[in-house]
Image (cartoon, rainbow, N blue to C red; front, side):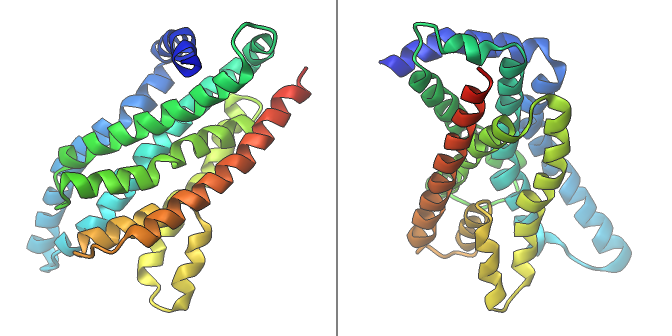
Length: 249
């Protein structure tokens, strides 16, 4: 019930903030735009490769989808809300919340749950829109849920380590390569070092997606590891985020 009150109090404020800031609106809509781009651009690129060098890239479509469908949708949701949090810090809204009727606990629940839910919905919408995969709706949901916690992780990362949007963009340049690109390289590592990429929380949803696209069904151990690991990182970042807020008093 308290979470519903937080949604009613803060939801309209977030919507207005995104509508006012064209950059945030662009980030929020980017998963759908990218899905449409992938749908039409990737098959065209495949035709060009076939015509020019006789190489078929269709067997690697799942790598494209694992980037745009699994990781990027959650990351963009988390980044958009993370920038809203930075705005709240700049405007001292978070300090005002500490003396408002809305408990900080409800604010935190709202801030973590909203990107998580939006991430699942966006991922489920982007996959069929891109049109390059073969997963059932149930399998799509498994992947979306395994990647959902990445959204609040991105949000808390920005809120904990950046003090403004400029610094936030600088952090995203480095973190984006590590979190979004390195898991893709793990596909080409066939030795035991493949599992070293598991230190990255984004590796596990990608691994689940690859297994499901390959026809594997025993993905529950990977799902449990993904949720447990991301959950542990979420708690650590949440503690850091709260310390950052209270230190600004």
